[in-house]
Length: 222
Ligand SMILES: C[S@@+](CC[C@H](N)C(=O)[O-])C[C@H]1O[C@@H](n2cnc3c(N)ncnc32)[C@H](O)[C@@H]1O
Image (tube, rainbow, N blue to C red; front, side, top):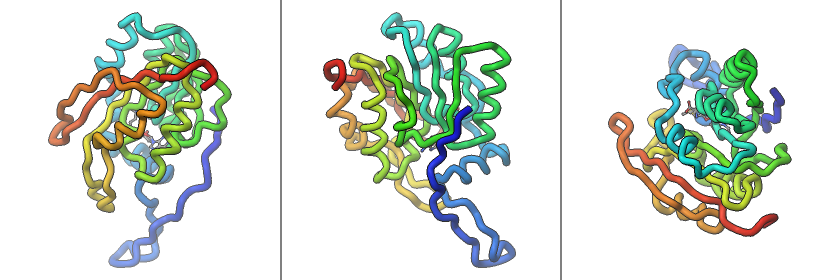
């Protein structure tokens, strides 16, 4: 595993009550995600490969090559794609999730590699993938990081590459009230580099959510 973790944003300090003086990681930082994995507060981490990922992999629409799994977590989908012939790079901020991913992929001798890094800054990767997944990462990015995410992803996908995104629709994070999720305007941000093939709207518990399949547009080298 390589580590290209960017400088951590400021920590938030608890200033009231019994936790006075104790630093808590600011929401959305690497330390915050790591704390969620370590504490077991990770309801998404079921080990189940979403049927939408399995359907895309079995569709015959994907060109062989590299696949990116942005915010890969413990790697269920990364390993699934690696078992189907892709060379996979999983990227995440959380060290302990990546450690588990590495163990699982090496135990099964899969061609999957894991990097601790920021999905909105893929400059450390020198490849163009034919497929990318994002299951629950983009929707948690602050609005000001999203243009960088889209541009960085576009720069690492070959023309025609498939990009499968799963996201909550707009919501407020209960811990800090941040406005997150994905609105039609957020989907429109992909337009310069991507064509939206389809969207499937549904629910995840009490939250509206959706799957989106994009294709990287443009000419080779664009
Ligand atoms: C809701 S979890 C989903 C994990 C995994 N995709 C799955 O389906 O199990 C979101 C993941 O994105 C990671 N993450 C959040 N922001 C990130 C960022 N800027 N760069 C890379 N990973 C990030 C978190 O550490 C976490 O593992």
